[in-house]
Image (tube, rainbow, N blue to C red):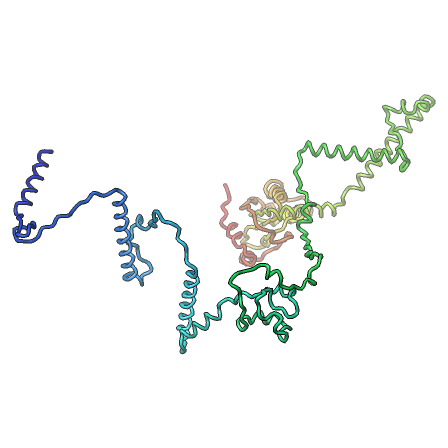
Length: 486
């Protein structure tokens, strides 16, 4: 392979230089008399080659950018033809400190303001001279010159003094304008001041100053109270205690209470309690009396034990809540639980023709502090449709109500009370295949109805209308589409 390649190169060189010749001036020309030039290769370092490549790369990127500016100006959504690897910023190497000259950014800002003002004037079709308008506007926007005397130093100036500069010609020479020194300081452009070439501090120290304004008093600002930081020290974060710690605290409280009671008895504040005599210890407590008449002593001890037991029952009865108070307590607890998580349950009942079933549903809902509604058809309506029961409330109340509806109530049994023989026969036929099913349970944000409502309906359209008004028509759709398990 190597011999073939060397032979090819030899033949190519012979064919290349075959037709070349030297002219009169000693230059190499081809057979047509045209001058032949050869590229001169010079030795170079690797770093120089890299720099040349970077310069070429920069020039190609600039050409492409100029092309995009001229040809792609109107098109906002175009795909860049610059490769991703060439988009990176070319870092300059061996760059020294570059100091920005004074006024560079000021000039740039002034040019930007000029552009913005000219655009605004062009939009408003300004008829005057734009350049003169710009010069006036930009001149007025310049900051005011620094005054010779700041406003906080003015109280320390004397009567005919306008600054602390000893070379100020206005000081002590213009008594007529001494009423308002601040005006003269603001109009500093009108009155010229002479400054020395060399600064001498002793001349500035010799300037008179109104020292009557200076005293040894210190002005303390009024402190502003922050209520949050005042309360921060008093706020105590409650730490949850373990069962063992709770038991220990209860023990300590009882111990302190008993200690306080004993001290009161010791100092005669309260009378000492009577000895607690029982059948097991009355012989030791009442020794003489028990030996003299044991039967009488035993009867007295039994009476004392009975009195203590009756007092104990009386105290318990006093603390016991009335039925109304217990209901209010349970209701408050249920409302707190339902505010945290309000559960809802939807039931389908075949028929509620039996009044005992309706009473049990409403009574149990009231006892468990549940809200909701029960819509059932008129028992005399033919054909009939299933009843709908919706209950809303706490998790515990819904659990009890569900157990009542599914397990406790016997839907096919007719009660013996308040029912005649004819009514019993008719209800037995109607309740033959009666049953209750839990269609759906879920969680809602809050209770829609606080009380439980029972309502008798005349037709099926009335049920759908009422539920659509409450914006819960989906409940009726669930009842209609519910498939009874076999």
